[in-house]
Length: 39
Image (cartoon, rainbow, N blue to C red; front, side):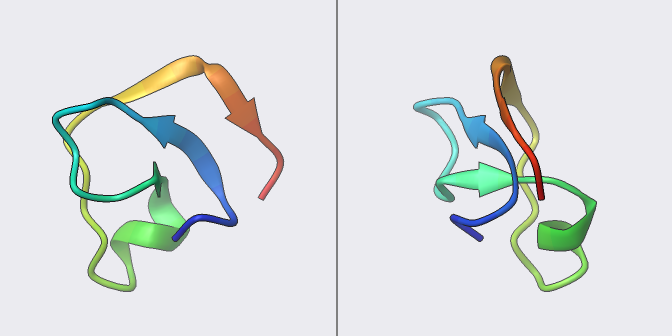
């Protein structure tokens, strides 16, 4: 999930997280909103 959503915080196992990522099993509890990039 490195190609969509926000950059994950250090405590997240995935680089980026968003609905498109969670639907694929890349669920992340937190993200850095300032690092938002278009999906």
